[in-house]
Length: 90
Image: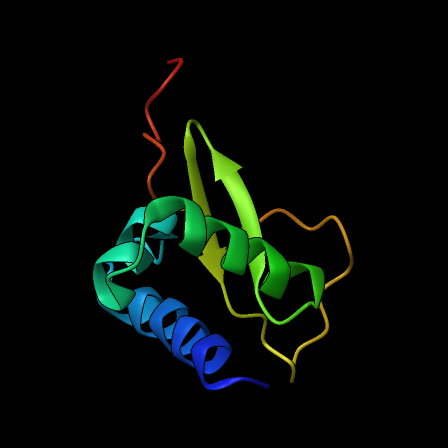
């Protein structure tokens, strides 16, 4: 794995730990690696294609996480999020 890939994966992991909702967006990563949004987005998608990270879209934001290799999660399992209003629709 390249150093650049490892930097991106570490940035995703660190973002999960510092963001209260555990949501690390593409824009969050661009601030860490100081590269263009499009370049970072392309690199994150390449890592997701290698199953090194997991990406989901919430609204207009792509969010990223590092899968837990010790705990098997079935394909198609939704990524948990705490950013949704629990009172919405009530």
